[in-house]
Image (tube, rainbow, N blue to C red; front, side):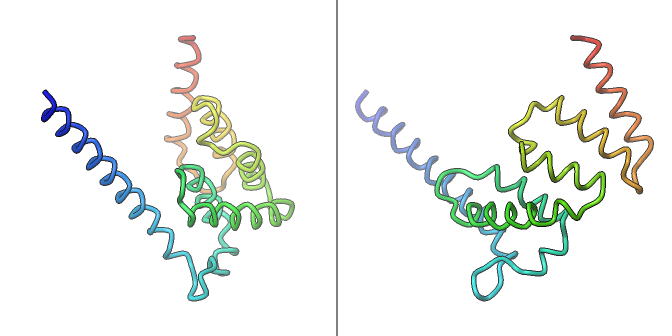
Length: 143
């Protein structure tokens, strides 16, 4: 019984270490956005949608992911500085994300907001938009 318990504890520790390594490897993906000085590339500033995507990704971080903490500061600073110069619908999306990242919202409410923003974007897929609206309305009618 003692041997089985010790084996299970070792398996649990091994699994924890494997998860830690996997998370650290995933965080290393963000290093490609850094320059040779260790800061985030200034070229990112021109890509507001890219910065917004990185900002949203930083909210998936776990404890001790320094690069994602740095990315959060970088993206928040830059999004706050450009939001008043953006046009609708991107300005609306950035403003909402700064108040409440998508991950921290209720999925259905976030979907509804995104549908209303997406329909105003110039290049959008009309069939996808219609399907999203139908899906939202169907689920809403069930509740």
